[in-house]
Length: 328
Ligand code: ZN
Image (tube, rainbow, N blue to C red; front, top):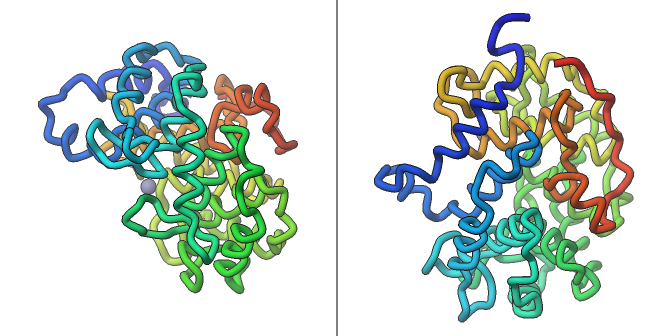
């Protein structure tokens, strides 16, 4: 197979991720300040899965993360001088764990911040301003687990809210009563996996709903009647991996779809073929390939969205099926 889109262009993607922080005069660089901490986590995780963790400077990265500490709140913002937020805080913890630098953090204060955001209904707000969503609930449970402080969570109240978000199709929405969406299905499934409560899921019905997300071109969508998008390769597959149902989709066709969304000139992966790449889709494309057992990639843990060997070392790895490595 000589076509460049028939295999993962690792050296180009490494270069693409390295180039992201370079042009600080770039308008996009400023527009994406509210996602900067997440972007670093996406870039670092993709690099680690591709076997190039050291492509970004470790000290510089740790300094940036620590410069986003909001000392008033006791957690991390997305950018220096931004208010602390749950999503940025989870990304900061994940980055520091991958870089083996968690000792820089006042864990007690972070735990206090996280727990303060749980609402009486059991869901979590993203920050003190109060927007609630099952994604923030996952950020909270994931972070508490990574910090070894899950026992401080009111697990029954948390699971109770997820139960309220469960729909007739087996899926979950962003809030109670909202329609099922692949991203919310994954965050709820992963949360229940962390809490050892997968019995809350109608696994056959949900597995079927997830498998139905694959379109004739091989790509996956997030809801019925929507377009395929590379990021759903992760959102759908991680839930399927947790439920041990990955073989229900056509892996060869999905691999071909993800690879076709690569930029063969400048590197990076887009939401779909021909679009502009970004670090979010690059990360989730590589993550999807890893969950499919793509040859040469390190395993990704589908619950924590972190390199599996780190989760294993922390004693948090469950027995998710590992697919046999396939030929590139
Ligand atoms: Zn997307």
